[in-house]
Amino acid sequence: MLLLKKSSIWIAFLIALVTLPQLFDSILAVSILNQMTIAIVFALSYNMLLGQGGMLSFGHAVYFGLGGFLSVHALLLIEYETMVFSILWIPLIGGLFGLLAGLFIGSFSTHKAGTVFAMISLGIGELIAASSLIFSSFFGGEAGISGDRTFGPLFFGIDFAQNLEIYYLAAFWVFLATLFMYLFTQTPAGRMANAVRDNPERAEFIGYSARRVRFISFCAAGMFAGIAGGLFALNYEFITEENLNAATSGRVLLMAYIGGLGYFIGPIIGAVVLTLMNSLLSNYSELWMLYLGIMFLLTVMFLPRGFAGFIMMHQVAWVRGNMKMLIKPYTLTGVPAALFALCTIALIEMSHTEEEVFHFLGLELNTASSATWIITTVIAAAAFYAVRKSLHQLSEAWDTANAIPKEERA
View (cartoon, one colour):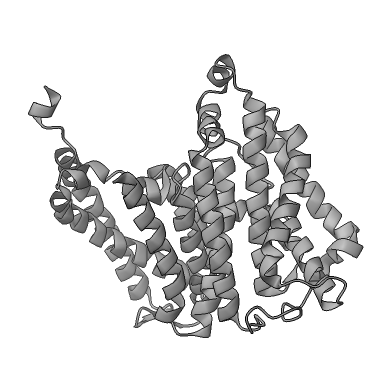
């Protein structure tokens, strides 16, 4: 029964990957979906380090970037007819280079975890990022390097010139990478990675080398990050130093943490959310990075297990059939919370804009009028007060929905 349930989940995932472009018939939607596929593999690979292995890395973009650079060089070899093979295998080339980088760097960085590992990863990341500007013959300097994905033999008549064709190629690799990363969590190495994360001393006492377990997880994470880099190279046909630096490493950390570390689906949720914010919200506001920072801060403070953890918190209430008990208190808290968030955004945007009239959700707000500022502030304060007043009722409803019946306690 459990095997059938898991199989149905993977079949649904595959169907979703295949049908999503048909639901959004636009060039922008396909472009966003391509970015999501890259982000999903990249975030899941980072979860192998931090979520499953307990290794906080500030330089995971190294393997993503190196895989991407070698993938672009492979495109150039195909273009110059030095080598002849389908670009279908470009992500695999990126993955192999990410694996080689993981083997070398992991050989000395995985001896310790915690702060020592984090500082080594930060140093390696800065070293590689600086080297990319020095060794321009391979990295192309500040301009990076570019290739052309339309060269090489056709794949059943497909030259991969269109973004939709690249999406289906990426979907193929996303499904494979996601499946194998999940299967890794079910192996003894994946199980021991969790044990080493939680209690490395105990793992050592029962005969397992914590360093070797971390090394295996590290190399696997590097390989899948390289696959994500290969997908990036195919999608954009160029790669630069930005794909190696600390900003990219920080972005993947945000994806994994906001989505939910330790949950396999968490990084997928985080990758989707951050891609949408980057692709859509950035079109409407120059301050989208500020909102991303606020969301990360609120996640750390109130949802330390991420969005996936928040969803899993409702498992007991769902199984007991008590979810309906939470609808009313969630509504009483959620509506004023959403109103408070919208008013806060309006105040931030009005303070940033130089226009006299600010258009927000169909409203025309006069930034030069004191009344606009006062009314918006009063509504925000009232909404915040309503949220505070409703939290007690929400807490009581939550305790009731998750309470263990007396007969089960006995």
